[in-house]
Image 1 (cartoon, rainbow, N blue to C red):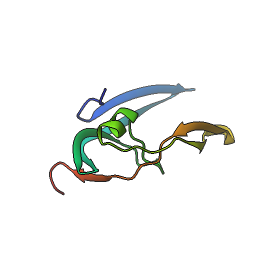
Image 2 (cartoon, rainbow, N blue to C red):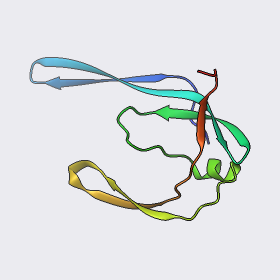
Image 3 (spheres, rainbow, N blue to C red):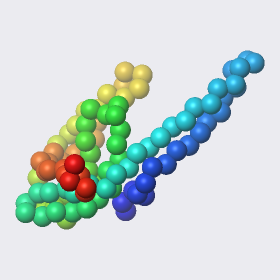
Image 4 (cartoon, rainbow, N blue to C red):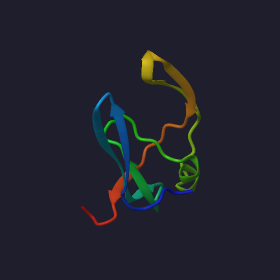
Length: 100
């Protein structure tokens, strides 16, 4: 299932002693074209400015005809922990829907 198209925002209110703080979190999604193997697929991309990596759904990989082997990937998470999982490294082109 593809993410919902559009920009969403959530607010979170915390109380610390006598001060009141309001935080606004925004998750940006935009439609993009993914291109590989002479195929083109429109999907919604979740933009995360804090991420060093790009991830794609396994179903989308199949639709684009990308057939690669699984590899073990190590990801550094909070508290200096390292998590391992299986991933398929692929190469594809991302293009904006509006041509910019």
